[in-house]
Image 1: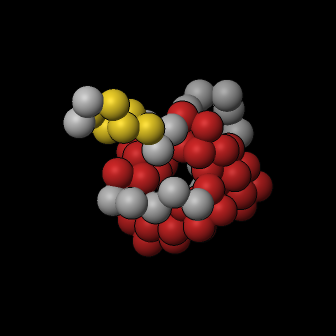
Image 2: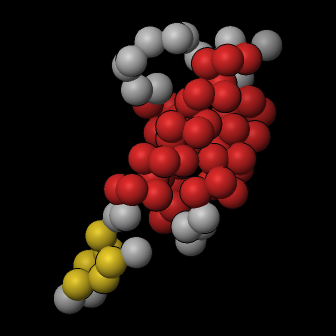
Length: 74
């Protein structure tokens, strides 16, 4: 994570990689549509987890998948 003058700057590589991992899994399971459009709900979950201090892309993706699946309406 980069910090400059007290402002937190998001590491887009970590967030992007985590999103790619999570969205690939969720597309394969049918939880999200197989399109090139970003799933806003999944992206928001990943950003929230990142902002809370999770910087490992695999762990970030796994936690996002678990939270996304837990929130999916039955």
